[in-house]
Image 1: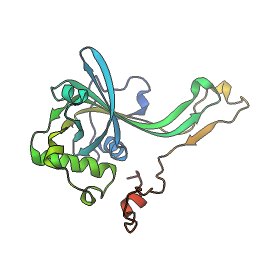
Image 2: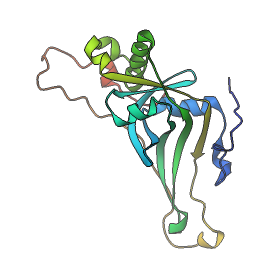
Image 3: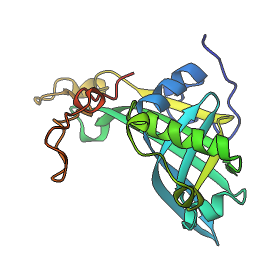
Length: 219
């Protein structure tokens, strides 16, 4: 069921407000198709934006990394964070250079991350991260041991304050430019998985699993 959401002053879109999407279901579809986010935060007055993988369960995002990393050391102390995810769907070529654009879907989440201390939730969050990137791989791999778990931090970011923004469709030119003699339209873009490549040390008898052979990011 669609869940309308009332944006806050920080998440309400001002520029190109017609592209705003304030609906959890729509935002979650974007989050579930992507798997790379950018986490922005400020440390000692210096802004940082770090790319990292993520997973989602219900109204929470999970990110992880080395317990010694600058990002996780800062964020786990309650530093405000901005998580962004963008899916690029096409290059929009207008008649005017000024009106060139891109078709895209994006989500911005604002909030504070908290450290996941419970061992069970931490292990489940790591499973979620793995399954979000490539479903089926977690059960087919060696599970993390105690040393690896200790060296890894997992953070939970509640999806409470967010906004989505979407652009679709053809170019939008100024009326006087529609007669300009050049091609205009959209160059579609999508992520396409290639054929899996065996590890050189793989047992030759080991077949490529279906989740790798048929990998696709579409829901």
